Image 1: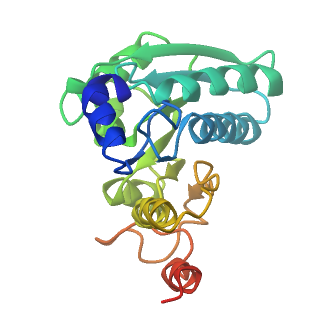
Image 2: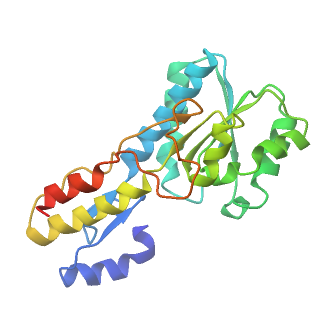
Length: 238
């Protein structure tokens, strides 16, 4: 976030050194040359997640939204999810469970499962960062929670097996492979004086058991467009 590095950004701007970054709600300018996956992208993901859950439920969802409020990039995600969720299904229930970053890789699954155990009417869980859902199926089983579907976002390869075997309903992955190249493209444009383009709204996909690409459970980089490298090279004249 700009607030964490603002003095350095001012120094870099004075030296005419471009700075590009990812996954922040800050705006460009005042030292920031370009941002990939900014606030607009976060909001678009929230809208997609809401639409998917409402559609899958047939308009009968009662959803627990598991949030990580410590990360500002998830604020527009949460706001967009809530507004679009109610727009698509005014009668659908929605509650929020806010967790700390320390819950990732530790207590997150148990905290979610315990909440579900005490709120029996919930039938869907949306986890804004899929790292929190690793081990969730086992935690729900231990807590006696059944008939609850969960969807995650910002997933990694570690989340894909649960989608393939049907434990998790779906995931909205982050195209980390393309992200690095978009950042490089922003720098390239800055170096040669080309206008920056809006690269904050990257392609959004929902991967389910039936649509997750083959091989996605193996180690590697998440890629949406297999041809993206050659497209960038063509753009750069390489």
